Length: 153
Image (tube, rainbow, N blue to C red; front, side, top):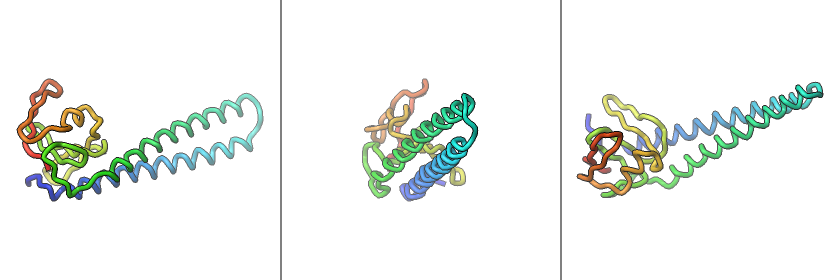
């Protein structure tokens, strides 16, 4: 099976599903933490009580940061069009290299369809930074390997 531009819609949906799933999980954890904080308020007073509240508050702050990062993913995806076929690698490009295939969007892991394996990476990731602006035939060094861009969709 060959990689073609037609797979870009599936890649986009894969990344969109990844971001939405992360947002749902974090929001669920925030709700659970809020419930725990409410029940901690009703419990006994003292040092133990204050420590418990502080730990829950720290967890809420951490989850708030995770939610912010997940919503940033959603925002990045809102600026991607799957119809654009650029000659240079940019946001939303599907890039086939001598080493692997990459979809420049968000860091969402590996998209697998039959024998096809495409890494969904952020433009800010190390390999994403190396790929940005490249066109077919351009080469670069990454992880002590020489990698050449074979096709940009």
